[in-house]
Length: 474
Ligand SMILES: [Fe+2]
Ligand SMILES: [Fe+2]
Image 1 (cartoon, rainbow, N blue to C red):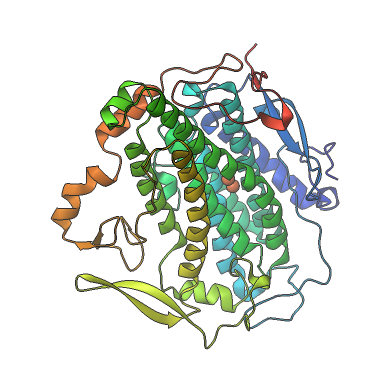
Image 2: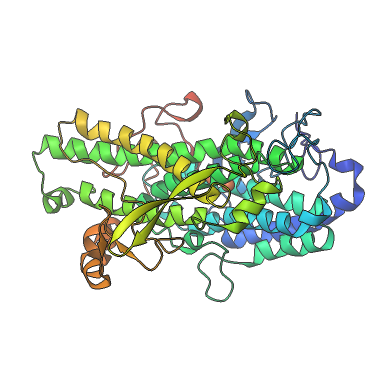
């Protein structure tokens, strides 16, 4: 169980390490300042029906109740230690998992933790204005839940920095509160976390695609030989599942509503669909193309010596490492990667170690495809022939083998000019964004009411009815 009587709730026996406790208590007010500045806009007085972690056991860890978000009990929760755990891959395979940072991997591990940690406050910053145009109280509560949990994920990474990296770690923890998403001078570390999330369609796409990148990165780090990192990532994953649920069901509900209107009023043409105040399926496809492509860039270069060394040294594993049946060293293994050769895309086998980013990206894409298939069932059941598709892996890429190439969603290698001429057909144009923005007028906060462009969910949160007062404005 988690001790909530402490100033900083935790299950790591923080009270026994006074120096660490003081360092974190010093960071806490800076964190609160960041939350007041960059957390959800005009939300501080609202009472939100949130879940709070009460235990780190897989079942029954959540407690629901009304909370003002600045009073949310952010804290430090690690999955319990398994004394028999080992390093499960790389050259240290078979050694006991490390409880302290191995000196030679210190700077690498710190960089990995900072890069993960930086994404957590970034997404809160990206989403901070969306509460002002929420489609329902249910959705408003969900975005707030996501936001407080991303705040807690920041705490999780900051704990590791403070506990295991001394002064450097404390400085990094401060810098995490200083960078800002989209800031020209001091941006967040990774590209997708500097893109704006200007509307709820972008928010659901972000939580479906980009939070799932988070899931896969956390899964790879949950295999780490550095045990405290593995344990903290395992617990973060239980929270991540809800974020992806919000994304997938959000998109489903938009598709559902659009299909209902198309069927009822017998309209097909995108312009006619829009005229009825719902989002046309072509626009859904364009948003999908954009979010998919910027998110798969987050996995890094197709061939990466960093990825190889993270693996070889036991710092970052593969997705479900211990379920894979091979030697877990990969010295002689190969993996196929794509590259552009002339005007064709070809497959080339490279060392499996350097291709680990690509492998994680492929695992991710397979899971994404499952979600897209579920979305397509909605159109199928409505008798609408339109289907969403994932664009080619090379489409609109800025990192890796496809960077600098111009690939169509179907996988054709194009000239820059041809690609640019088609850009607005493939990705949200200024006009598309303006249309979606035009639906985000004001917030819908009457219990049980939903904006016209989105269907209600199938069920409420924690078995509450749909007309439950998920957020109290008082
Ligand atoms: Fe997160
Ligand atoms: Fe998340």
